[in-house]
Length: 92
Length: 416
Image 1 (cartoon, rainbow over the protein chains, first blue to last red):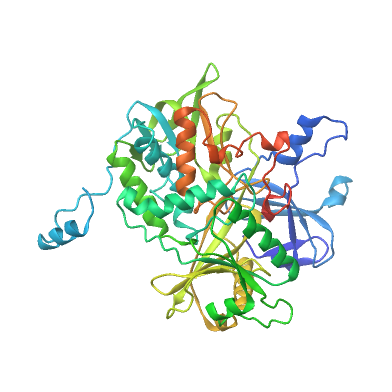
Image 2 (spheres, helix red, strand yellow):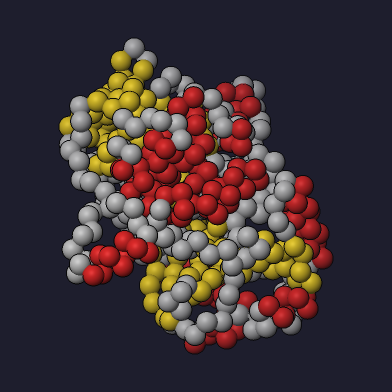
C-alpha cells in the first residue's frame, strides 16, 4: 500500500494521520429491525479478498470521515471520497 | 525413525546418509474420513492429535502453499497463559501444559524455552488491572507474580524506568511463559502426524466445497476432487474465503500483523517483556536477534506484508521502553494474515452444516494456542462435542450475547 492517502480536502497525506474504522459497506438497520438483522450488522463481515470500501477518519487532518476504496490483496488505493458528501449524492 | 542422541551419533559415523525425509509427499487419495483445510500450526496439530489421541488416522491436511508457510512461521514465538477470562484461561493453560511436554511427546526439538513473560505496568490503574488478571490466573492454577519496580529493575535494568510520562512501576510475570522455535512446531507436528498415517498434501489449494443434502461430501482442489466424511477448516486469515465456499458468513476481518527481527546482539534480554504504555513485545533469540512486534496495521488485508508506518510505530514503542535500542538495525520484517474476531477470542465449534467444523478467529494469539487448539479441535471432530476447556469458544456466542472480550473493546476487530 502506498503510504500516502489522497484526502479530497487536504491532498496527499501520510497514512499515520488517519484512523481506520473499517467496512463502509454496512447499512445500519432500523432500531426495531430485530436481533438477527442487528447481529448481522454488528458482527458479520464480508471480509473480501479484493476491493473493499472502508471508513477512514482523517483524525490528524481535516477530521472528515472518508471512504477509502482499496484492494486488500495488492493494497492499492483506488479512490478516496468524503463519506458525508458521498451519502448526500454530491461530489465526493 | 526416532530421533535421539544415539541416532545423531550413529548417523554421524555413517556420513549422515541414514536420514529419511521427516514426512512423505503423498498424492491425495479419493476419500478421507477427515480433511483439514490448512497446513499451518493448528491444522497440523489437529491432525497429530486426531491420529495420536483420538485414533483417527485416515486424515488429510490440505495446504495451499508449502508446509508452515502461514502464521506458524510468521509470529514472534511467544507462549503464555496469562488470560483473565474463565472462557480463555483454562484453554491457554492446557496449551501451556502441552507445550511443556511437547518435545518428548512428538520427539522433535522445538526449543521450548520457559524464560518468563513480563508485562510492564505504568500507572496505578494498570497495576490494579494486572493484579486482577494475576489473581484470576492464580485462581485457575496458573503461575503469576506481581513484581514491584525494584524487582523489575534488578531483572531488566536497561528499561526506561523514569520516563516522564510512562514510568515503569512494576510488572506481572508469568515465569512459565516463554518462547518456542515456531517452524519446528510445524515440522514436529507434521512428522508426528505423517508417521501415524496422516497425508499432508502441500501445494493443494481448496477451491470449492461440495455439498449434497446439506452435508459436505468433499472439496474441490487444485489436485482434483477429494471426498471426506468430515471437513475441518483451520485456515486462519483465509477462513472467510473457505467458509464462503460453504455459504458461511463469519464474524472475522483479515488483518496484517508484522513481526520483526533485529541484527544479532550480545545476550541482554533473558525473558519476554511487553510494554504497557504502547503495544510492543520483545524477546531475544538464541542467535542474538531481537524478535519483536506491535499492533496490526489496522486495515483489512490478505497480503503477507505490511506498511512502513507500522514499522516506524513499532520502533518508536520499542525505543520508548528500551532507549538503548535507538541504534539497533532491523534485519527482517514480515507480515501474516490474522483472522481478527469481533471479541478478540477464538472459535472452535461446529457449524450450521452438520459435518463442517470451524477453527478460526485466533487474532494474533494463535501461536501460543497451537497445541491446545489442535487438541480441542481434534476432540470436537472425533467426538462431536467440545473439549471442556474450549466449550465457550462458540460460533454463536455473538448472537447469544456471550462475547469473550479480554480487553472490553467491543466489535471492532482492528482494536483487538
